[in-house]
Amino acid sequence: MLVLAATPIGRVADAPPRLADELATADVVAAEDTRRLRRLTTDLGVTVTGRVVSYFEGNESARTPVLVEALEAGQRVLLVTDAGMPSVSDPGYRLVVAAVERGITVTAVPGPSAVLTALAVSGLPVDRFCFEGFLPRKAGERGRRLAALRGEQRTMVFFEAPHRTEAALASMAEAFGADRRGAVCRELTKTHEEVRRAGLADLAAWAADGVRGEVTIVVEGDVTAVDVPSDPASLAALVAEEEEAGATRKEAILDVARRAALPKRVVYDAVHKPQVPGS
Image (cartoon, rainbow, N blue to C red; front, side, top):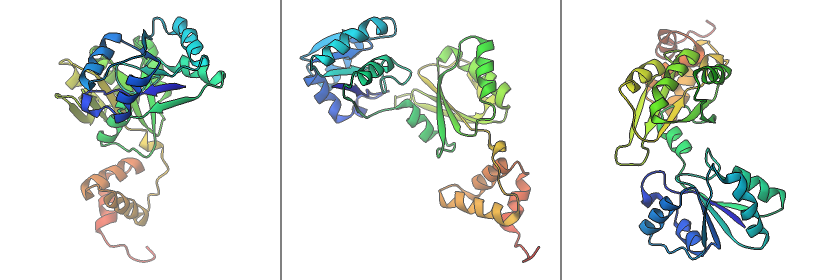
């Protein structure tokens, strides 16, 4: 059996309880960084009794057949990366595919995820979202990728290196619009956790002073592409729905105005001015 185990993205106390058991009992532990694995097991008070092998981007292709052999021999292989869930912008996808092709059982120890954590705290819509991973490093390729996402209606989640965060946000502002809402989530669950929420241009200006730590960027989808009814009764009903979901009236009015591509005053009037039947 192949077991994909989520590891803490910040505090070790966030480790799922099953992780310690899996580390202690696996026949083979494949780790993205064996030094980080040693720190993790020390913090958890776990002794690894199985064989420990490295499994990272540089040796993933060569090491996958070796791990598949162990799986076919009946061994339990545990895969851990530096933080979060293996195969999500981390090593693991090749091994999962190879295991599935051979009919080997693949399971997971669920746990911390920077994608879902950032989405949850962003303050942006969470009902529909997509994960876009890391953007291309070259400006031209990055611009083309973002241009293709210009009409994406779902909330988008990106990973980014701290030293490229300003450039990424500036490219997003150019592709999506300076006022498109975003959130930069830095050092999630760690001591210096920070979440910055603003328009993309303002976030890019903030990042110009330098950004440190692990970064996840959440960007609002293209709300102007959504067909929102613009009659007063429908607008008032949409505001009421958002209020029931926990938004303040001011926040709800602003969000509905964005979604309907209408001035805020129009939505405000729909909520506060009684409608004459038949008007």
